[in-house]
Image 1: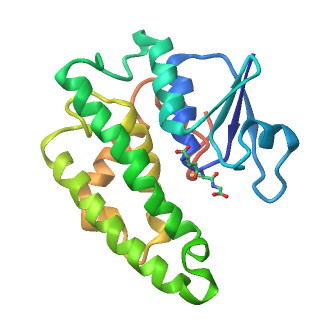
Image 2: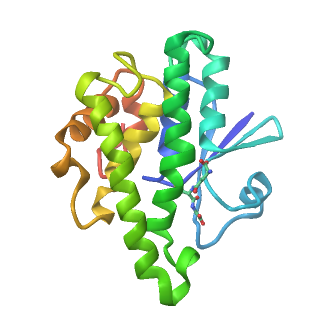
Length: 207
Ligand SMILES: N[C@@H](CCC(=O)N[C@@H](CS)C(=O)NCC(=O)O)C(=O)O
């Protein structure tokens, strides 16, 4: 039995997409961040999505959850052989997405955590600057390839495509500056197997 704790239009969309692509059976539980249930906090004491509870074992960290799902379902083709050069490239971008990019988005969503009430405007301003530096790398990579780690979709694409939808948080849209990001977002969210994960999210019609 698998329970998936999900917040619509958040980073947990990447796990929703991997669940759809792998066909892993699960029950989706929508989280209300303003009123966290005991079961959700037991799954992740930090009170963050995504969390997966598999036969009583709690899994957190979106990148780890998705790597585990992909290892369980190699036929879904969500990652190349990790020991190959392609695998190294896909892992590099997966960790870039979760370890470098996501924390910067957190600074934009919750600037008061980093600067308090007095410093939150500056915390947010510096985060936007850093975010643009990181998406410049993503955009440069996507000038030459359809997906972030080459011509085949991999797990980092799921997370990146979700985050590009958050550009409404910024004064200047990422996709206006880098149209390749819009192409990538649309390529991923309409990809066979993945599309069901994005359905009902970010204003798209439900499946
Ligand atoms: N390192 C965690 C971060 C998870 C995370 O920050 N999730 C956000 C939604 S995108 C959340 O639940 N935020 C609520 C909060 O920070 O209070 C992961 O990659 O899974």
